[in-house]
Length: 483
Image (cartoon, rainbow, N blue to C red; front, side, top):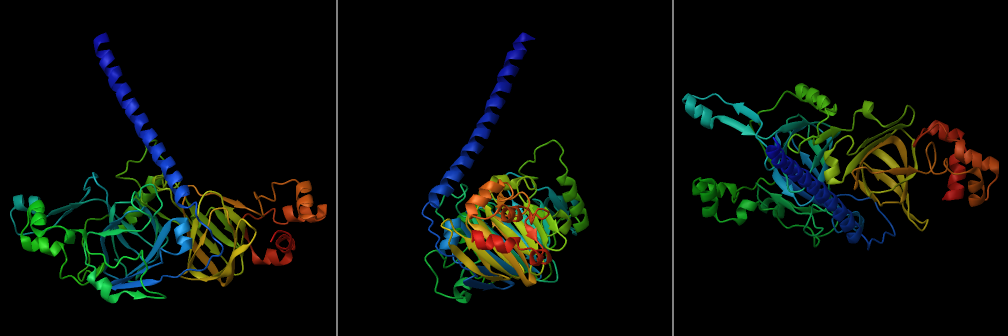
């Protein structure tokens, strides 16, 4: 008995130390990522910000790709890149992977998305009818592939670097997807330039159809996106896949001028559960089962448009919904999170700052005024944002959002998996937590004025309704004393 105990103990110690090694490696990667982000951005010098629109448009057979200028100092400081895809009904965004993790927000439409993770099983199976023998049918007419998932408006898709991804519009309206890439992530061991590696398609269509909105292509903008097969020898491809030379040439897409979004004339037919069944499965996955998710079955999608999931809600002002690694665990590996905000007409989001993340704010509907203040107390941005525009809010910079007459809706992509905000006014705010005497002496105001600053908003958190604001003088007094 004793002889069998020691080998078992040694085996347990081996696996225990192996687990510790994985934990230490993960911790080292996280620290490396934080150090790299700080080192790369130590030269940020933001004196002014501006509302940004895409400056490059590429038309394909069944859609459009629009990109923001990566050379813009705001995007460069935040270490991110941004793209917007418009995919027509029956349009297929061809498979590709990139050198940076990304978050995808579905602004409009619905469809199917596939993510191919190395080493994960082909768990979806589809059997097709045929006149062949049963043996041939079992060998050739059974399609197996990795898990696919359906997406809809308001979904966030979280995708790691280097993982190939495709999506298809199976609805009746165009899909509009906004993508933010974290090019300063530790997962990107190249430089800070965004690189997309196409598995299909050819770049000639881009070079002929690309249009610049405001200026000529810049240093970082790629002049093409020929797929990776195109760079390999045709004979080598044929031998590696055991296919004829003609098939290998088709993989290289040498005569394909459709671009990176192609039309599937007869629709895309593949193995997938009904949408309702998949939604029920997603709800089931939210319930903790005591077991950590494996990478292969980890959730990659979460909807942030559902009003019932709001974290902050005001019946007269609007709502805020956050998505962090506590709700979607894969975000911890990506070091990214998201927020969706809805402000009703003329409502105000309290002045606040991001404590541990940059924020990429993209407007999805309506219009609103945004003010951003830097560390020297100077205004770096004070302007109106409209649908389709974005602005960078650097870490620690104070920001205020106020909706216009049409209301104001946005999605914010943040460079930390648990981004934290510190509100300046209202419940649980910086002013609320200070003693009256400190406020009195800091702003040279009376005790009554200090109490008004602290408690005029004591029943509201972050979102201030317009009716309350018009009846109260607290915001006007704060603006006069603070800004």
